[in-house]
Structure formats: C-alpha cells, structure tokens
Length: 411
Ligand code: FUL
Image (cartoon, rainbow, N blue to C red; front, side):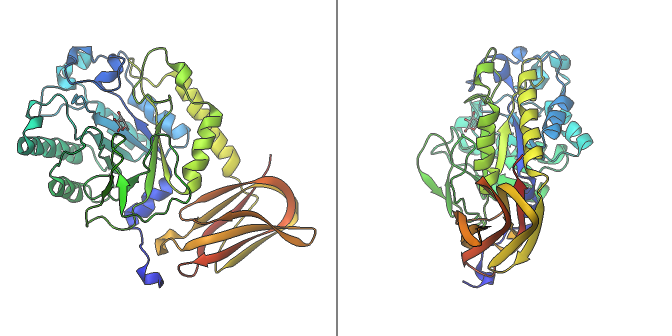
C-alpha cells in the first residue's frame, strides 16, 4: 500500500487523540433519585444540589491530569441541566437557585477558567418529552436543543451521542450532524450519525489489542450485539474512546456506594488497556446530591493521576526517528520496565508488526512482540538491566515514522 492510500486523521482528530484522557460527568435528576435511568416522571422539585460547585469538578479533573471534560446536558430521562426554551423539564423548574441556575453554563465557565476543553452529552432517547413518539416533531425538538447547546456555551471539543434506548429508532442524522458541522466544526462526533470517533464497544474502559484507528463499523449500544455500518460520510480514520465509571456500573451518584469505587490497581489496568492501547480514556466521576464530587472519588482519581505522572512522565531516554530499526544506547545499564511507543499518526498508522529487543550478554533478546503502535502503545516488560534496546519493525504499510520511543526505568 502506498502512503497516499493510508487513512489519515484530520487536524481536529489529531488534536483530540493527543488529549488522551477525558473526565465524563453524569449529573442530573437521577442524582437525587438513587437511580441510573429515570423514566422521565421525576419532579424537577427533586433537583436541588445544596452546594454545587462546577469549579470543584473541573479542578479535580485538571489536578488528576485529565485533558477534557464532558457533561451530560440531558440524559435519557429528558431533564435538562440548562434553561432550555424547548421544555419546562429543566433546571428552570427546580428549586435550585430559584430556577435561575444553569449547570451547563457553570461548567462551561469553569472549563474556560481552567483552560479545560469542554464537551456535551445530549441523549437522543428522551423518556419525558411527549413528542418523542412523533418522529418529525421530535427531530425538530432535538435539533433545537442541540442548537442551544452548540451556540450558547463556547467551543466544544466533543458531542456525545449515546445509542442506548435508541435501538431501531432513526433520527434525522444529516440534520443533526449538519448542525454540529455548522456551529462546532472542530468538535468530535461520538459514535452516531457521521462519527469522527467511535465507541470501543464496552463500558469497562478497555480497548482490545490491536485497536486500529481505522474502522468501517462499530457497536452503537450496550443493548444490541448488532454491528452497525457507518454512514458513508464517516472517514475511515475513526479512533476509539473507552468510557467507564469510577464506581462500578454506576454512571450517576448513589448514596452509600463507596464500595463500588474502583481500586487504584483497577484504574491502572484500565489505563494500560485504553491509553496504553492507543485509545482515549473517558473516566466518569459523578457529583453527589450536594453538587460536589465526593471526597473518596477525588482522592482516588488524584492517586490515579499521580501514578500516571510518576510512572510515565520522566523517561530516562526518549528518541524519535524514521525507518525499520531504532536503537537506544544508554551510558550505563538500567532496569527498564516500560517502553512507550508512538507513531507520527498525522501520516497514517503504518506499523503492523514489531518487536522490542534488549541486549543481554551480547545477544539480542526479544521482550515484546506487538502489532499496532498507532497513537500510543505502552509495553510493560519484566525489569531487566540493559544498556541497549531496539525497536525492529517487521511489517509496515509505509515507511515507519516514530514520534516517540521512550524508556522508563523501574523505581
Ligand atoms: C449508556 C447509558 O445508558 C448509560 O446510562 C451511560 O450514560 C453510558 C455512558 O452510556 O449507554
């Protein structure tokens, strides 16, 4: 294959892939009802966070090293976190701030203050809206909601379209995608319509290996096994995002569920199998009924961020280069326990098969045999003292361009 035939990312996709880690935030009427999926009948009077502070959410994300933030503006229950003109089923009808509050606005402002890219989730499935059963009327309703969000809250990094509950339902995707392209051309489109990024296909936060950046289809819902084919407008380059809640199987906050909090070891495993497999990780933290991310979750995610920084941010040596063989020589033997590889994916994903070898007693010894590198591959190796390590690419679609070949020494 010549390099011109390789699928390539757009500039916006490249930028998004470099973000690597996003914080997802599920908050809404469910937060006050100890439930995951409201049926759209809960009274807005229940929505009353006592000390909501969006800055605490964003600062938590920032401190833990997350590079973008996505809020559920409306979940399947239909309750809107912004004072929309489209329905009364929103913060406007709640006691919070006497109906004058706007959670989406507070998040947008806090993100702007902290330099955090902001994204929004707007559930297509709406269990409250009476016109939902009328396809055309609901398409208008949804387009209006989306327009409010796309035009009222500054630049958006991603628009999250959740397929849950919409199995078998067709929305007016050309119109929906047209709105995103018109008002937020840089925003990534998650998994529906004409996606620019795809769902990894599970809610465990893990990608298979290899997880190529090119695809022609992906799952759209937890609740159907069907692989739906993309619309023709979707480019072949469609990187994956891994979403997972920090409390096992709970996207929204529930009282007394600290026992569901993932352990640091579980989060490490998720990191290795998402970012370490070249995909983005979208980790959900749910604010509680005070409107604050609980202290236990803040503590855990901060530990996670510290571990990432301490483990990966200070390689003992890092090079880049072109071609099928790249070697690193160290001035003295070191115990290497991780190797970080990145391709320069602006020119496509080229590597198909590679090995990592270390020099041991004058002989090259294979320690890793992999296929994809793509945006990033993190390899763990049993710590062995060596002063020479090389990357040999055994097969590639075009000349390999290695953006990073970095060695981490065991601590
Ligand atoms: C799923 C939804 O049904 C969950 O409630 C959650 O929003 C998750 C991110 O996507 O499909």
